[in-house]
Every structure is written in C-alpha cells, then in structure tokens.
Image 1: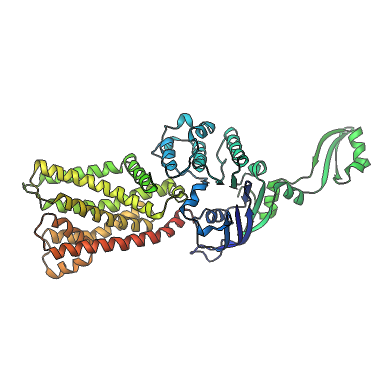
Image 2 (image 1 turned 180 degrees about the vertical axis):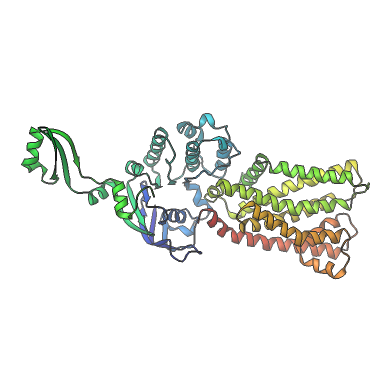
Length: 284
Length: 241
C-alpha cells in the first residue's frame, strides 16, 4: 500500500533533520507498528504519510503512485485516530459525528460503532462532559466513520479500561480481516504483540529494526529453556539449550524425576527489544 | 451538500453553540441602543458609521474566536486530515462571518426603518458589508496565524483599529479636516470601506466609489492569496510541529 524510499525531512526551524533516510513498506492488509521513544520521528513520519507535511525528500508511493500527486480525495480512504481529543466540546457526540460524516462520500453505520464502543447511550451528551476514556473512544469512531481503507492510529487504547481496550482491539482486528491496513503508533507493547503483523522500531530519525514481533523475539532472545524445580528442601534452577532439548538427558531426568515449579523459554519481550534497540524505556 | 456547504453550516452551528452569534447579536443590540439615544430623527449618516465599526472589528474578532476554539480543542487537526481544501476552509469561515454581519445590518436597518428615518440604499449597504466583512475576515486569519493565543490576537486587532479604523472614523465624523491627511487615508483599506458604506446614502463622487470598490476587490483577492499560501505553515504548526 505504501512504499517509502529514502525519506528525509527537516522542520524549517530545526537545524537537524527529524527523519534521516528511512525506507520501508506497509503491505496491503497488514497491521504495521511504528514504535520508538518520543521525539524520534514517529509522528512526523505519520504526518508525512497522511499528507500533513509535504516538503520532504525521497519517494513515497501510495498504491504505486507518488503520494504528492493525490488531491484532497486521498482523505476519502484514510482514517486518522489522534491520541488527544479532537472534538467540538460544546457539540454532542452525535453532532460531531454528523458534521464529520457529511465531509465524506462514504460512511459506516456509526450508530452500530457507537454501540460497540459503549457510547451510544451518551451520544446526545456534549463531548465536554465526556471522560478521557470516552473521548478516546469517540476519536476512534471519528477515525472509522468514513469507512477508510487505511487507518493511522496513535495510541488507540491509551486511557481505556481493559474491557474497552479489548473492544477497540477487536474492531481493529476485524478491520484488518476485512482487508483494511493499519499503521499503529503506541507505547503499549502488549497492544503491539496482540495486533501487529510487523513492527519498525525508530531511533534518532532512522529505522533501527523492522520485522514481525515473533521474528524479533527469536532474533533477540536466547534459545534457552529455564527450568525451576524442587530438589528435596531446595528450589533449583537450570538452563538448557533449546535446540538440543530432545536429546538432553539432564533435562529429561529433571522432567521425569523432579517436581517442576516453572519452565520458560528465554524469549524476549517486545519491551526488552524496545529498550535494546532504541536504548530507552517504553515509559519515556 | 459539498464540503463548502458542510463547513459553512458547521461554522454557523458552532458559532451558535459557542455563543459567538449571541455576542454578535448583543453587539447589534448595542448599536440599536446607540441609534435609540441619538437625538436626531434622520439617522442616515449615523448608520454607515456603526456598520463600519461592526463589519471591520467583528469580522476579525469572530475569525479569531472560532479559530482559537479549534486550536484549543484540537479539532483543527482532524479537519486537516479530512477531504476539504484550504480554500473551502477559509471561505467557509469568511462567509459564516459575513452571515453574522448581514444579520446585524438587517437588525440595524430594520430598527431604523421602523422607529427612525433612514434613507440608504439597502442593497448597496448589503454588498458593501459583504466585501468589507470578507476583507476583514481575511485580516483576522493573518492575525490568528501570527499569534499564540486569543489575547495576543486581540492586541493585534486593537493595533489595527487604532492605526487604520480610528483615523478614518475621525475623518468621517469631521474631526479631521486636513486635506493631505484625507488623501493619505486613501492608502488604507478602511478608508475604502468607509467610502463604500457612506456612498449608500448617495451624494458621493462616483470616482471615489469606483476607487474604493476596485481597491477592496483587489485587496481581498491579494489577501486571500496570502492567507491561502500561509495556511500550509499554519497547518504544520497546528498539527504539532
């Protein structure tokens, strides 16, 4: 869907470029995660891909055509979900949605979506009276209302309780199953693990790593198994090579003769990979 | 409905909900109050003065108010990723302002017609207000682009009024009689605005009317181009540079 080749971008007031020669692809029908600490260029990349920033160097192809050649009709098939509230606070949710719906040729059944995200009963309330979580869900509805082909989502579950976060993630998955493409930006590695087909980690305006979450875990993890077991009064822990596990007699003996307390493959989490690749903590 | 129509009706809906139209209505009532207390029966010469103040200052103020609400609530961000052009966005705001100005002159003219004596060409007044309000709405855009908050925008607007509007008002009220100053004032857009409004009462030389009309039309086209061109920088700033 998107092909980005040697993308460079510098804000007019900055001395240094924010994006430094990145190249990647977002495939049709995938959920692509763009990850990294604050200020590394994730939002700038997203703004360039959504045509909010135009003066870049390099090539961006959208559906095989230069992104710059698209006019305002480009937004007919794009949905952008912002992290911060983007609604008129003195209008009701319904009034907000109706206003934005009229700007598009194609619309979804927003009543149904409002019901799914639990806002239908409050649709006639002013948005100013909404809680943070309700505003986040309304942002999500706003992004979806034009029945987009590609969704750009910035922290779509941030500020949501686990129940509503699960619903939003379910809708994102259904959107993908129906052929939609998603570019997801988030600090929540659990969401990335659950949703993303591929992820790119950004650091200092460059792409430091790009692959599927599973491949990254295999790449950065150790191929070892840690076994914790009871040995008489003591609790012992041993580590075994994962590839020769089936022929490892010591491992087999422990399995057969000891009470196993825990057994774990030493797979890295995405949090660990985030820290290792970008050099910072996910909370930053 | 096309995007311009949707944006315009949305602007008017929000101007109502955010009480901007109420403020505009209250200002119109103040003008009516002024007319009520004016101790002359024929208010033909007073109405253009009031309409001049309203069409220049309220247009700038209302553009600033709606745009700062959009900035504050982040809605400008979501509008920037909608299938609308910058021309549609700018024109929708300007025409929403013009609608409010038209309501004001209908109220003022209606009051004057019923309770006082007035001898103005209403359609001339209407056309002049549309042009003046359009130009000054664009001035409001420039102020909003270049200021950080509403207070700073108000300060800029006040400077504009002091430099461009007050000298013209003083000259129109006969308090400035110097002919050189009168000629210098032709450089500024408020002088043309004032002449157009005054011309609706008749009795002005036609070259003055044509000069003012052409001046404001050309100035509006040029200013629209500047506002349109600078919108990209504004959009970058608002999308969170």
